[in-house]
Length: 164
Length: 126
Image 1: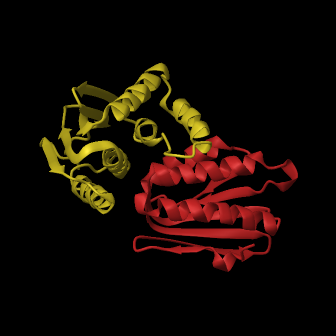
Image 2: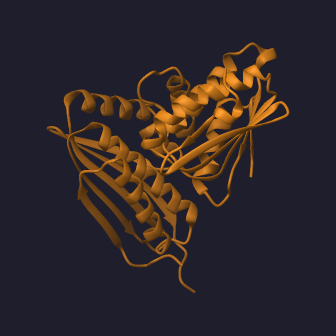
Protein backbone atom coordinates (compact mmCIF):
# COMPACT_ATOMS: atom_id res chain seq x y z
CA UNK A 1 0.00 0.00 0.00
CA UNK A 2 1.03 3.56 -0.57
CA UNK A 3 0.00 6.16 1.94
CA UNK A 4 -2.71 8.60 0.82
CA UNK A 5 -1.65 11.15 3.41
CA UNK A 6 0.92 13.84 2.64
CA UNK A 7 3.98 13.46 4.81
CA UNK A 8 6.90 15.74 5.49
CA UNK A 9 10.18 15.16 7.21
CA UNK A 10 12.31 18.15 8.14
CA UNK A 11 15.65 18.25 9.87
CA UNK A 12 17.98 21.11 10.66
CA UNK A 13 21.31 19.86 11.86
CA UNK A 14 25.06 19.89 11.47
CA UNK A 15 25.63 16.63 9.61
CA UNK A 16 28.77 14.57 9.93
CA UNK A 17 29.81 11.33 8.27
CA UNK A 18 28.06 9.05 10.76
CA UNK A 19 24.87 11.10 10.93
CA UNK A 20 24.41 10.99 7.17
CA UNK A 21 24.13 7.21 7.13
CA UNK A 22 21.91 7.37 10.21
CA UNK A 23 19.53 9.74 8.40
CA UNK A 24 19.60 7.59 5.26
CA UNK A 25 18.67 4.49 7.24
CA UNK A 26 15.92 6.32 9.09
CA UNK A 27 14.44 7.65 5.85
CA UNK A 28 14.55 4.19 4.32
CA UNK A 29 12.71 2.68 7.27
CA UNK A 30 10.22 5.56 7.38
CA UNK A 31 9.35 5.59 3.69
CA UNK A 32 9.18 1.82 3.40
CA UNK A 33 6.07 2.19 5.54
CA UNK A 34 4.68 4.86 3.22
CA UNK A 35 5.65 3.61 -0.23
CA UNK A 36 5.39 -0.01 -1.16
CA UNK A 37 7.90 0.24 -4.01
CA UNK A 38 11.26 -0.48 -2.38
CA UNK A 39 13.12 0.66 -5.45
CA UNK A 40 11.63 4.13 -5.05
CA UNK A 41 12.56 4.18 -1.39
CA UNK A 42 16.10 3.19 -2.34
CA UNK A 43 16.29 6.09 -4.80
CA UNK A 44 15.09 8.53 -2.14
CA UNK A 45 17.69 7.20 0.29
CA UNK A 46 20.50 7.45 -2.25
CA UNK A 47 19.55 10.99 -3.25
CA UNK A 48 19.29 12.13 0.36
CA UNK A 49 22.65 10.61 1.22
CA UNK A 50 24.44 12.22 -1.71
CA UNK A 51 22.88 15.63 -1.11
CA UNK A 52 23.79 15.51 2.58
CA UNK A 53 27.38 14.55 1.79
CA UNK A 54 27.53 17.45 -0.60
CA UNK A 55 26.40 19.71 2.21
CA UNK A 56 28.95 18.27 4.66
CA UNK A 57 31.75 18.94 2.21
CA UNK A 58 30.74 22.43 1.23
CA UNK A 59 28.52 24.06 3.85
CA UNK A 60 30.39 27.12 5.06
CA UNK A 61 28.93 27.02 8.58
CA UNK A 62 28.13 23.30 8.73
CA UNK A 63 24.41 23.86 9.26
CA UNK A 64 22.08 22.11 6.84
CA UNK A 65 18.33 22.08 6.38
CA UNK A 66 16.86 18.88 4.95
CA UNK A 67 13.26 18.42 3.96
CA UNK A 68 11.69 15.36 2.39
CA UNK A 69 8.03 15.58 1.41
CA UNK A 70 5.65 13.04 -0.04
CA UNK A 71 2.59 14.42 -1.80
CA UNK A 72 0.14 11.76 -2.95
CA UNK A 73 -1.97 12.42 -6.04
CA UNK A 74 -4.77 10.61 -7.83
CA UNK A 75 -2.56 8.93 -10.40
CA UNK A 76 0.93 9.77 -9.23
CA UNK A 77 2.69 11.04 -6.16
CA UNK A 78 5.64 13.39 -5.85
CA UNK A 79 8.62 13.02 -3.57
CA UNK A 80 10.67 16.18 -3.05
CA UNK A 81 14.04 16.32 -1.33
CA UNK A 82 15.27 19.80 -0.49
CA UNK A 83 18.69 20.63 0.91
CA UNK A 84 19.67 24.12 1.96
CA UNK A 85 22.98 25.34 3.30
CA UNK A 86 25.29 28.32 3.20
CA UNK A 87 28.33 27.99 0.99
CA UNK A 88 31.32 30.03 -0.08
CA UNK A 89 31.58 31.64 -3.51
CA UNK A 90 33.79 28.87 -4.90
CA UNK A 91 31.29 26.16 -4.05
CA UNK A 92 28.36 28.19 -5.26
CA UNK A 93 30.13 28.56 -8.61
CA UNK A 94 30.86 24.82 -8.71
CA UNK A 95 27.21 23.96 -8.06
CA UNK A 96 26.11 26.40 -10.75
CA UNK A 97 28.55 24.80 -13.20
CA UNK A 98 27.21 21.30 -12.51
CA UNK A 99 23.62 22.44 -13.02
CA UNK A 100 24.59 24.26 -16.19
CA UNK A 101 26.21 21.07 -17.46
CA UNK A 102 23.15 19.01 -16.52
CA UNK A 103 20.95 21.40 -18.47
CA UNK A 104 23.08 20.72 -21.55
CA UNK A 105 22.59 16.96 -21.31
CA UNK A 106 19.02 15.79 -21.78
CA UNK A 107 20.00 12.19 -21.11
CA UNK A 108 20.91 11.84 -17.41
CA UNK A 109 22.52 8.43 -17.87
CA UNK A 110 24.59 9.59 -20.82
CA UNK A 111 25.75 12.56 -18.80
CA UNK A 112 26.57 10.24 -15.89
CA UNK A 113 28.83 8.17 -18.12
CA UNK A 114 30.64 11.31 -19.29
CA UNK A 115 31.07 12.43 -15.69
CA UNK A 116 32.38 8.97 -14.74
CA UNK A 117 35.03 9.10 -17.48
CA UNK A 118 36.13 12.51 -16.23
CA UNK A 119 36.01 11.38 -12.61
CA UNK A 120 38.34 8.45 -13.31
CA UNK A 121 41.21 10.89 -13.87
CA UNK A 122 40.41 13.27 -11.04
CA UNK A 123 42.73 13.38 -8.06
CA UNK A 124 40.40 15.30 -5.75
CA UNK A 125 36.67 14.74 -5.35
CA UNK A 126 34.49 12.66 -7.62
CA UNK A 127 32.27 15.27 -9.22
CA UNK A 128 29.63 12.55 -9.35
CA UNK A 129 27.27 13.20 -6.44
CA UNK A 130 24.65 15.43 -8.05
CA UNK A 131 24.95 13.73 -11.41
CA UNK A 132 24.37 10.40 -9.72
CA UNK A 133 21.28 11.68 -7.93
CA UNK A 134 19.81 12.71 -11.29
CA UNK A 135 20.76 9.51 -13.14
CA UNK A 136 20.49 6.73 -10.56
CA UNK A 137 17.94 8.48 -8.39
CA UNK A 138 15.89 9.32 -11.48
CA UNK A 139 15.34 12.76 -10.02
CA UNK A 140 14.51 16.07 -11.63
CA UNK A 141 17.04 18.52 -10.26
CA UNK A 142 16.95 22.26 -9.77
CA UNK A 143 18.69 24.78 -7.59
CA UNK A 144 18.42 28.34 -6.35
CA UNK A 145 21.05 30.66 -4.97
CA UNK A 146 20.17 33.57 -2.70
CA UNK A 147 23.19 35.42 -1.39
CA UNK A 148 25.28 32.61 0.11
CA UNK A 149 22.36 30.18 0.51
CA UNK A 150 22.24 27.26 -1.88
CA UNK A 151 19.07 25.22 -2.14
CA UNK A 152 19.03 22.02 -4.15
CA UNK A 153 15.73 20.39 -4.99
CA UNK A 154 15.49 16.81 -6.22
CA UNK A 155 12.07 15.45 -7.19
CA UNK A 156 10.69 12.22 -8.46
CA UNK A 157 7.26 10.94 -9.37
CA UNK A 158 5.87 7.69 -8.04
CA UNK A 159 2.96 5.93 -9.68
CA UNK A 160 0.16 5.74 -7.17
CA UNK A 161 -1.52 2.46 -6.42
CA UNK A 162 -4.89 3.01 -4.90
CA UNK A 163 -6.09 1.01 -1.96
CA UNK A 164 -8.52 -1.69 -3.08
CA UNK B 1 54.35 -7.04 -3.54
CA UNK B 2 51.24 -8.11 -1.65
CA UNK B 3 49.50 -11.41 -1.20
CA UNK B 4 45.74 -11.59 -1.32
CA UNK B 5 45.58 -12.34 2.38
CA UNK B 6 47.14 -8.94 3.15
CA UNK B 7 44.40 -7.15 1.28
CA UNK B 8 41.77 -6.39 3.83
CA UNK B 9 40.00 -3.49 5.47
CA UNK B 10 38.15 -3.66 8.76
CA UNK B 11 36.40 -0.50 9.84
CA UNK B 12 33.53 -0.20 12.27
CA UNK B 13 30.92 0.00 9.54
CA UNK B 14 32.71 -1.34 6.48
CA UNK B 15 34.94 -4.26 5.71
CA UNK B 16 36.62 -5.77 2.70
CA UNK B 17 38.79 -8.79 2.14
CA UNK B 18 40.37 -10.56 -0.76
CA UNK B 19 41.12 -14.19 -1.42
CA UNK B 20 42.78 -15.84 -4.36
CA UNK B 21 41.33 -18.79 -6.21
CA UNK B 22 43.46 -20.12 -9.02
CA UNK B 23 43.97 -17.15 -11.29
CA UNK B 24 41.08 -15.20 -9.86
CA UNK B 25 40.73 -12.82 -6.96
CA UNK B 26 37.55 -12.48 -4.97
CA UNK B 27 37.00 -9.13 -3.30
CA UNK B 28 34.20 -9.28 -0.76
CA UNK B 29 32.68 -6.06 0.53
CA UNK B 30 30.28 -5.64 3.40
CA UNK B 31 28.69 -2.87 5.44
CA UNK B 32 28.35 0.74 4.49
CA UNK B 33 30.75 2.31 1.99
CA UNK B 34 30.32 5.99 2.83
CA UNK B 35 32.80 8.80 3.42
CA UNK B 36 34.36 6.89 6.29
CA UNK B 37 35.34 4.08 3.91
CA UNK B 38 36.65 6.26 1.11
CA UNK B 39 40.34 6.43 2.08
CA UNK B 40 40.50 2.71 2.82
CA UNK B 41 38.92 1.83 -0.51
CA UNK B 42 41.20 4.27 -2.32
CA UNK B 43 44.14 2.48 -0.78
CA UNK B 44 42.79 -1.05 -1.27
CA UNK B 45 41.74 -1.06 -4.91
CA UNK B 46 45.16 -0.14 -6.36
CA UNK B 47 46.65 -2.97 -4.28
CA UNK B 48 44.01 -5.38 -5.61
CA UNK B 49 44.89 -4.17 -9.11
CA UNK B 50 48.59 -4.76 -8.45
CA UNK B 51 47.93 -8.23 -7.07
CA UNK B 52 45.74 -9.12 -10.02
CA UNK B 53 48.59 -8.18 -12.34
CA UNK B 54 51.14 -10.01 -10.21
CA UNK B 55 49.28 -13.32 -10.45
CA UNK B 56 48.21 -12.63 -14.05
CA UNK B 57 44.61 -12.88 -12.98
CA UNK B 58 42.02 -13.53 -15.61
CA UNK B 59 39.21 -12.26 -13.43
CA UNK B 60 38.44 -10.38 -10.24
CA UNK B 61 35.07 -10.99 -8.66
CA UNK B 62 33.70 -8.17 -6.56
CA UNK B 63 31.05 -9.38 -4.19
CA UNK B 64 28.66 -6.55 -3.35
CA UNK B 65 25.97 -8.81 -1.92
CA UNK B 66 26.49 -7.70 1.66
CA UNK B 67 27.19 -4.09 0.87
CA UNK B 68 24.35 -1.99 2.22
CA UNK B 69 25.28 1.22 0.41
CA UNK B 70 28.04 2.89 -1.59
CA UNK B 71 28.38 6.63 -1.93
CA UNK B 72 29.65 8.47 -5.00
CA UNK B 73 33.15 8.91 -3.57
CA UNK B 74 33.57 5.15 -3.14
CA UNK B 75 31.88 4.60 -6.49
CA UNK B 76 34.54 6.85 -8.00
CA UNK B 77 37.24 4.55 -6.57
CA UNK B 78 35.79 1.73 -8.67
CA UNK B 79 35.55 3.98 -11.72
CA UNK B 80 39.25 4.81 -11.40
CA UNK B 81 40.19 1.15 -10.98
CA UNK B 82 38.17 0.10 -14.01
CA UNK B 83 39.70 2.91 -16.03
CA UNK B 84 43.17 1.67 -15.10
CA UNK B 85 42.36 -1.85 -16.24
CA UNK B 86 41.18 -0.37 -19.52
CA UNK B 87 44.52 1.41 -19.86
CA UNK B 88 46.46 -1.87 -19.65
CA UNK B 89 47.79 -3.61 -22.71
CA UNK B 90 45.14 -5.95 -24.00
CA UNK B 91 47.14 -9.04 -23.00
CA UNK B 92 47.29 -7.84 -19.39
CA UNK B 93 43.65 -6.93 -18.99
CA UNK B 94 41.47 -8.94 -16.69
CA UNK B 95 37.71 -9.10 -16.35
CA UNK B 96 35.65 -7.93 -13.43
CA UNK B 97 32.55 -9.80 -12.35
CA UNK B 98 30.24 -7.88 -10.03
CA UNK B 99 28.05 -10.00 -7.78
CA UNK B 100 24.93 -8.14 -6.74
CA UNK B 101 22.07 -8.57 -4.32
CA UNK B 102 18.65 -7.85 -5.89
CA UNK B 103 17.32 -6.84 -2.48
CA UNK B 104 19.82 -3.98 -2.33
CA UNK B 105 17.98 -1.90 -4.89
CA UNK B 106 20.69 0.75 -5.33
CA UNK B 107 23.01 -1.95 -6.70
CA UNK B 108 20.97 -2.49 -9.84
CA UNK B 109 21.55 1.05 -11.10
CA UNK B 110 25.04 1.56 -9.73
CA UNK B 111 26.43 -1.70 -11.04
CA UNK B 112 24.68 -1.20 -14.37
CA UNK B 113 26.40 2.18 -14.63
CA UNK B 114 29.77 0.55 -13.94
CA UNK B 115 29.10 -2.13 -16.55
CA UNK B 116 28.19 0.47 -19.16
CA UNK B 117 31.40 2.32 -18.35
CA UNK B 118 33.48 -0.68 -19.53
CA UNK B 119 31.14 -3.13 -21.14
CA UNK B 120 33.98 -5.34 -22.47
CA UNK B 121 35.52 -5.75 -19.04
CA UNK B 122 32.59 -5.97 -16.67
CA UNK B 123 29.74 -8.34 -16.11
CA UNK B 124 27.05 -8.23 -13.43
CA UNK B 125 25.48 -11.24 -11.79
CA UNK B 126 22.67 -11.41 -9.28
